[in-house]
Length: 492
Image (cartoon, rainbow, N blue to C red; front, side, top):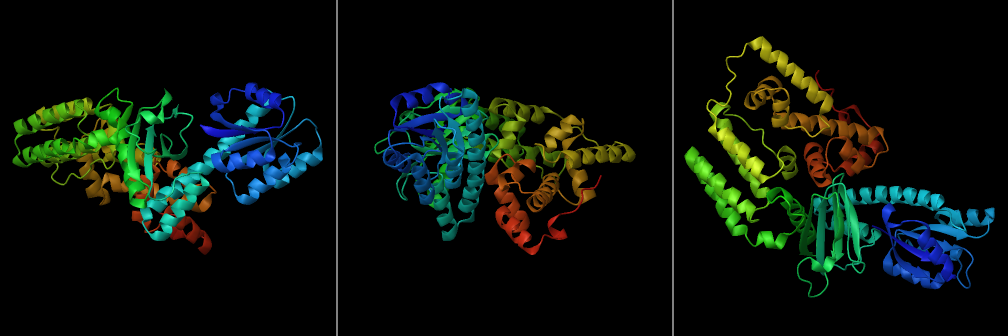
């Protein structure tokens, strides 16, 4: 929820403004009221609201002076000036001082709702940009990058000091939820389907009850982790909370998961994954099936994370691939891909067990050469036109009724690359084009290039280009662009 403060020297005006619109329906929560400009300035400093509705005419410090002082201090709030007089000079002065809107008394619901929509879009756009910059800074790992991360958190209104306890919450899904009114937190967008919430950890707090999470709607999973507010602590806390948020895949029906409870069973998870690896190395199908069954049991007990299951999936797929394609390398690289491929752990393990039970694994060596080439061209054309979608070798193979092992070989033999590397090349080239040719934010570029996880995009882009996306955009534009940044057109 975005935070709002209402300022007016008349109590009935504040009550009227509160009652005019359904603030929560528009994603806002009224977190404070003030009856004077001076009191409002102190409240803004303490609460770091996203939006302030302030009357212009008040005794002492009036609304215009409040807007001016708060803007000069760099306080992260947007202002809407309120007046009972339709005077252009008020509007002009308010806008000059930084107000984003102006409304008259008595209040009109449609007018205020229009302002709220515009402010929400602006705030979320800015937070999306800052979230991406924060992730890049954490991934960079230098003292300068950490200092930049602290400045970003300061702009977001994060109240914690370095070294204190930190609560990290990651939510997966397009919906929302609310925290208890007394919990001071900031929200950062990590992708179209993922949001990060950071809060100071109260002394003596145990578990997640103190957060007071309510109103969960259209959210697949919420993950909670605790850390110390340092670069490494924040980075680890983010990764741990993300894993906990995907416990809904491990144990269907799990909405809120505390990473510390999962991590407590880390020894069991390690033992089960090692048992599977030993079975795979022995080339004993019966032992592999038994190890998969034990993983299923551990998953149902909540003793694994989705990362353990991703490892098991990739190791088992490699084992199966060696039977028919010795050089098969098309694995999943992120647990989000696994969650997109299967609805839950049971379905994933059922699929692996079914693959183990097949004989021959759908050999395709006898297919006529000309039919194979024609099919491959069709698949390649589809990939070239849809690389920004969530593609995997398995999903494409199923869509085109084509053997996944053989398709993997065709990419290597025909294009001298793996399927994953081919798609990554297309996406990075497309992202580079967008960074140079548009004014889109880096987070918007990541989404349009097919990445729903900003943290992952920062790593992929840096690995491919040697630069962060923000650095690439700045340096290439300073140079005036260049053909080398635009990549090559994919074959059709």
